[in-house]
Image (cartoon, rainbow, N blue to C red; front, side, top):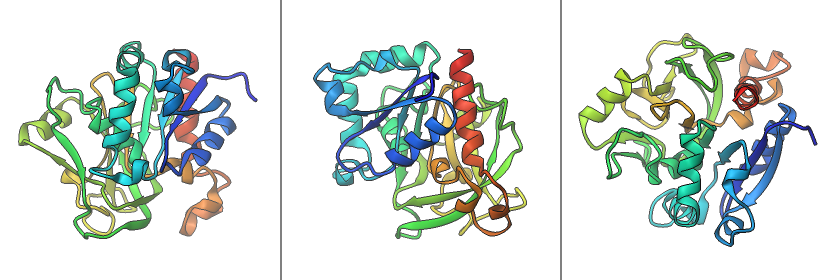
Length: 260
């Protein structure tokens, strides 16, 4: 086990991407640990004892009621103050796919000062599960990944979700996200230009694939970088590379945590 930043890979019934996330952090030099939300609820594990908090994809609680809402409710009821302190201290909190939905339901994103939830990750406009490779573009300078994934970077990454369409309850939310540099990733064509379906697999407003909080240390994204760590996991010409963009993504998070 590397003597790197300690990562809590948080899980509960229904998550299914925790192993890929665990191995990605391990290969990038971190010290990951599986943490079940029940361990947090019983006080056996404290969120504050870690350097990175990662919430993986899957279908937590079977996506019953709404994707991510039960996971978010359990986490924040058990350790809401710990999580908020973690965020305030600048430590990275990453949510991928279902984990992104959890961050939205917990109102850790978009972090615009609204007490009510103002964004949602709704059913895909195609009304079906979308599972394939697409491309995303880094849209803003981010304190966590910016050293290795600067604005303008375009990379291939897989998606796999039925509820990933980014919507906002009011137009002002979209404007503030864009003005504040919180739109971190957008779906695009292989050439990096704006594109509709199928490159935007779910119909998200403004092609949004991922956002951050105002400070940049809470990141949520629908695509799965943990499934693109190696070139053989890619499609087309990208398969010729030894590593995929997932390695860069996880390397960047680990580097940030070390410097933090």
